[in-house]
Image (tube, rainbow, N blue to C red; front, side, top):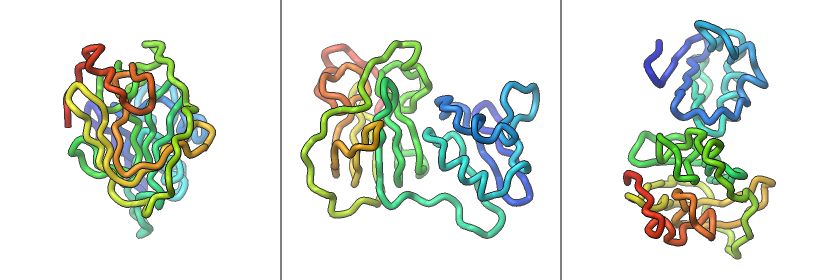
Length: 216
């Protein structure tokens, strides 16, 4: 089963889903299991029957964008939100969220990579445009003093503001590319125009540069 964006392939134990418009080509799938995600072929390229349901689930969990998801048929639980909501700040790239996410009114998801360069054609999601745009932004921002959160899980609402930043509400820890916690918030505004001088946080530069993007 397929449409322009979503491919669904079944095995006896698991339903594998791939949503092309969410993919940022991190290549963790084709590098780790090229028998399941077969690159550079004409015709079918998704083969969940080549792996166990546990292995398909692990592949999905390692996909930062959430382009890969699954539904188990073997009675074991499907993917659950993590016990700590995180956003990882990717060097010269997007914001990689892992949590109990509610993004722009869409159905809940647990993984997503959101644009912070301003160039994506699929905002608020990353589409890899940061590479062609030559976006430069550190994945190791300075640590902001913060207290441990009273809770580390729960729903995280991400509401893109019209012509402005991502408003994020919920318990969230910001983590650098090397795994350092650089901030803890219950509400924050994250830059998505690419011009803030205080990345990953918004500093109002979107108004100065005339950034245009739809809101939630």
